[in-house]
Image (cartoon, rainbow, N blue to C red):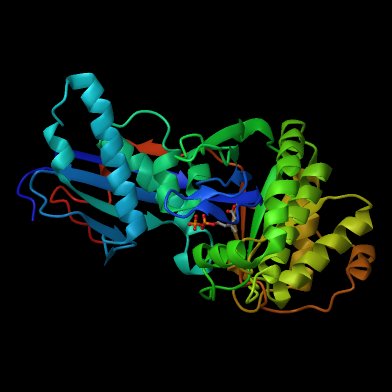
Length: 400
Ligand code: DP6
């Protein structure tokens, strides 16, 4: 146990992101370089975030990591890769600043504690927020300046997009060393204030095929994936950037749905096939298309990652009505008052015309709950020492 105060202790938070042009497939497994560029929306940290505290001290005997209060194996290759990369950058930057000798704190061991403000078991992308937060916090502890995509990416490809708020693209890059495979903000957090994001939590079960293994099999077996990466995504990236910049919801929504569908088609084109969507996911897709058809325009859009949960995009003028439609088709089974989490949405009655147009029999309990949120900022530093997850002995504080 540490006998004195850690030399440096820092706590930061980082957001979850949801891709609207999906990353699926690597051209380099070691450096985590993608086959295609991707684009995501950063979710607000008031609803979904990871908090990480990192401390270094000469008294620490080994690197140690706790996730949601439980100590995990620090030898995991992705974790090791992030630690190695940040120490290498720190050494490189100090060497140019202060001569050739590495500063002593670079040899100190690190203690890291990380937790999510949402249930990890909900099947929401926690690794992106987790590794972005790790990269951001370690950079403060080891005083590394500049671009951190390379560090976050070593943990999880999609994590580099969680280093920024608003709308973010991850350039696939061209260089073999990955130096140009970096995330970049396309539009800031407050660019599109009317945009809502609803996370429809369908299942809390663990998925059968993780993203890393799934995309590896797709790269090896899917011809559709190669076609998608070379012939479809470049045009879609340009078009999506235009839709975001011009706040063209119809274009944004349609492209988001098409790209999600193509990603899942690629999964089915993988051999053996991968399927992440379940019956409820498909009913949600049906509901969205019926809702849009009823209005004669794209008012709502869905996207699905490597799991059955839906992420819905909509605007101020449709959010309450769509929520009423969801409640009608997927009535909460028991936790009626906890069905809607996050930002409040004023309840409105569902018109008989829309009810008839949806033509869906209610499927009670299929959606567990909904988290309503908006576009949010990138990682933040927390200045209040009370918020550190590690105590002055460098060990996790007991849960309050
Ligand atoms: C479907 O970033 O989790 O969410 O780089 O192997 O860690 P690794 O994969 P990961 O894959 C995310 C896939 C996705 C689409 C996306 O977020 O772009």
